[in-house]
Image 1 (cartoon, rainbow, N blue to C red):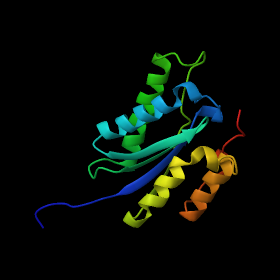
Image 2: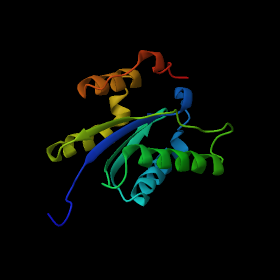
Image 3: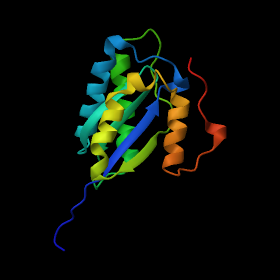
Image 4: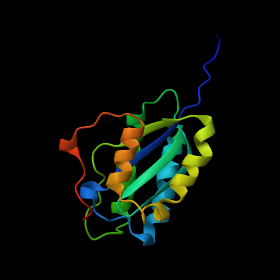
Length: 153
């Protein structure tokens, strides 16, 4: 086989440090655009980025030469730096350590896209902790409740 052909669809979910509600509406859309561009800069291809005041969902294709951890480390570091350099907040902005990562097949793309696109509506009915727990359970991801989220601040 002379070439490698791969298409990996992943959704990542990560929260603001301490789950502070710091992603203000006045810069939220621009932040999500920055995050999408940072994902693209790694060689991955962004499909959609969206979220609410305390967390973000990213859906993209993963470049085969990168690990998901490498992509997230770069995206989270550079996007928090962007928020701080633009002085959108009086306090320092940081992402919580870690992230959730979930893989999907081609036929799931429309549903995952719609789910991420409608985050504000979704979170009128369900809080982030329950949403994240359901994702972990659906994908049978083992987790340690000692490192679980605090309530929204």
